[in-house]
Image 1 (tube, helix red, strand yellow):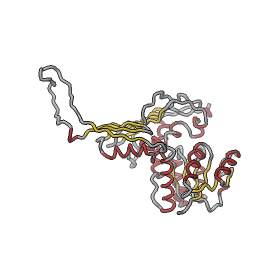
Image 2 (cartoon, rainbow, N blue to C red):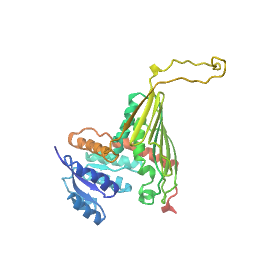
Image 3 (cartoon, rainbow, N blue to C red):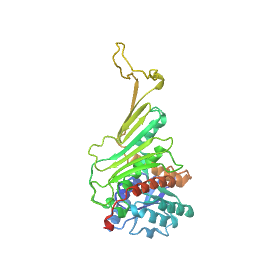
Image 4 (cartoon, one colour):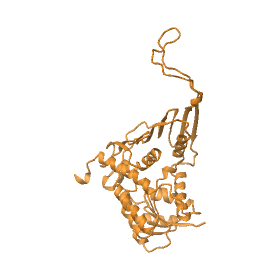
Length: 358
């Protein structure tokens, strides 16, 4: 089995705590061959931990022919230009989320990949998370009937004062946290032939920067359910990640536990519309009431199945299969382009003042 040589750009939270945390555990498929970071202490740590080559600038990789994959885990505003530069210099690239700020940037990234003949992938690992796959499986089973609304909440209460709350760095909750729930929402909406209908309200609440930390996004399309996405830093009582409403039941849960209940239509009492007043046998007013037999099921995550373990391994295996066997990417740049186009529209609907314009 071929072992792929990987270069990881950036040793921040994603580069070190996600990518470089996973890769050494899967030496059958991957080897960290190089790490790039502008900070000398981070380079020294990477060389010590992974026994790899280290560089201060990603352009020092140019000319190397032994790198099979470059992971772009640099800060968000570097994702489009650095990815394009790498593609043009003959590297396969998987870029961290957000892929870009605008659909036009995504188009340039796709064009660079097509011209170079190299792979362009996006690290949307939450698409592969067990909790999300459970939600998809339950919906696909048809047990809940026709789906009317799906609510996705990535909520909590937090204050933030790092670069991820500054517009100049392409940050804010929608571009930072949003690629996870919005990617899932568009996957569930399954309307790839065009842009969905969009309503979005964004606000600044607890942030110390100039980017948003509250987002309410509604998506729908002809023949599709309403998808309600909420990303909030001011929800002191977050009680679920997913809530699905269907014609025969519903689902509710989070990343650790999900439950769903439904009735079987063939077992339900036969009813018909009555337009005259409903009455009990004694002639007193009655209310529509029936007894349905409910079936309840549940899912619970195992202790070692977290958003940063199983899901990361699954997406890396799709990248490995694509590079070694030519299998199609599960998450394509074209799919992520729709996500970025939706986010771009949300920002157009919610122009926020910027600190660098004051």
